[in-house]
Image (cartoon, rainbow over the protein chains, first blue to last red):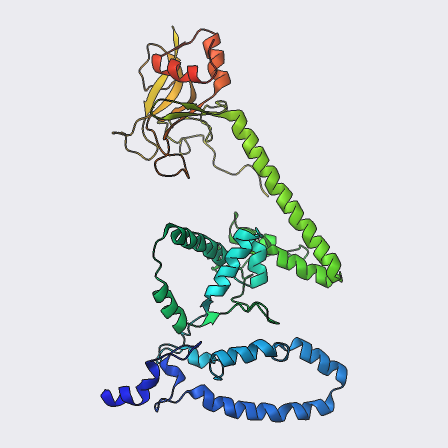
Length: 341
Length: 97
């Protein structure tokens, strides 16, 4: 053990800055695997472009350069490797904390700067959570969670409570993180795919559904086949505005028109939201009243007692229920559906 | 028979009855049993003061009452007699007549 600790195990005592500290990244002699391989790769990459440039003309080369993120964001890349002390970025195989479990590779978590930025965007600039999620490529639920936790954190700081900073710093130093680098060419690093539809439990079974050839069978129909209440995929998508954006792109609208449409849609959504809030407050002012008592208040809500229906058993009727048995098994009570869609 | 506006104790929606009083504000004939099926249910009354949803700890508690004010007014207008408790509650919401 002591031999290992003073030999190959020495590297694990202090984690590399800006890198994970997993055993898989090192060989048995304690050498970092990726520095060895990087030299080889860089050599082969250096040879490659010369062969290619002979064949393609300038235009395609320029386009390829634009599309290739490796070439456009050279500055941050340099800064990044400087921060790590010139060591190349981890490969997928270096991200496995458990050497015997090939299937598990640790996923990046949000860095402290990115969390702060998300909070600022939502809480300070009052941007829509969904658009923040789209622009930072972070799941909409994660953005909401970050905002909530950051709010609590700031509240604690204001109250003078101690935060477990050393702990969080130690954990973040060991995990791969998604950085946020303002004032660089490429500030945002995509964190995760954001517009994936969850696999709903109702869509799991394999169903053979005969449909006539003459009839259109759309995603709406498919959803209904799985479950009568299941929404179609287009409505279960987390950020439908991204789909709209792509659709407008395909329609051939240019950037300005797309932005204009986006702004219009946002305005419309905001107006609808305002209208909803206004109606709600109006309704509250009309129907609710709080009367001050000596020790507690009485809150009155004006309701309609007439929702009981013809048989006096309406489901939405006011009041706690009286014991009345369900009559649906009684003779003569028809449960056959009366309409067919 | 005299019509009365009174409270009728009902089981708690979640089941337990003991120490969990919940009332319906009902219109019933005066001589029927308290919890028998009424002519009409006009609202509910929760006599246990609770913190409003989202309120901070220590703020004033509220007793929640749902009532169809127009309907109650109508029944009072045609001669239904409120019990003392219902009188007290209804007098808080604009039923002064």
